[in-house]
Image (cartoon, rainbow, N blue to C red; front, side):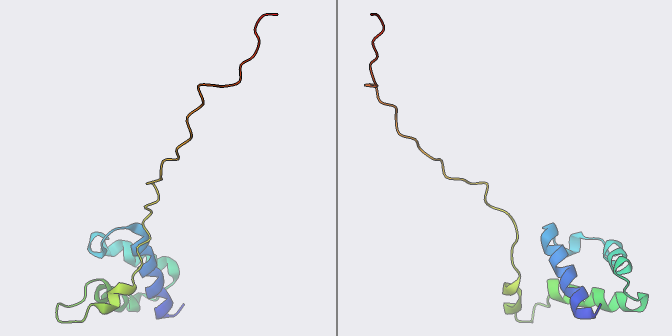
Length: 97
């Protein structure tokens, strides 16, 4: 797996977790690298690249962050479906003979 795919999969995982990058411990990210079979000598470099993606320097342009998609679900606000009132003058049936 090349480094771009690893970085992109980590970015997707962080965004899907709905946590900030700083809230995720470094050892969790390193264990992900271990599961993916990334050589141990690349871990610090990849972690630094992830930090640059999520925490850009104050002087840098932040336009590239607009490409991050928010995957949070906001579909719980459903519109109430209104049904028409039942008619008071419904069908009259003969009760007694």
